[in-house]
Image 1: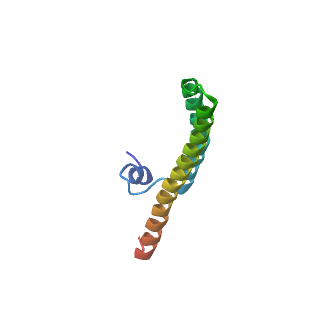
Image 2: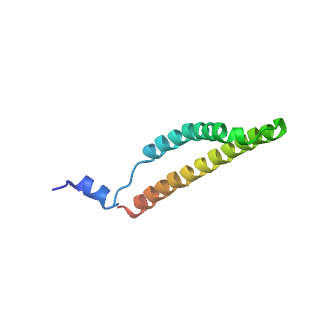
Image 3: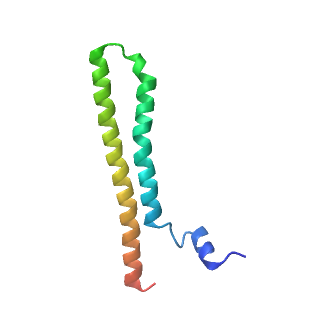
Length: 94
């Protein structure tokens, strides 16, 4: 039989901690630029001229920055949810 803590986790009565979310965030932060460089190298030969190459580099940098910002906001929202939930549970005395 499963103990109480494991059953709480499996039935979503307890959640993963914000520390796990922070770890996932940093893994994504490191992988996104690597993915962008990989895609840039794969798609780079499609553009031959120097002008389009510089536009491609600028576009790739802008895309990475936007993805990083979106990634950060997504994890901030999830962590804020857990903090609000903990505060509400503390208020109810549960």
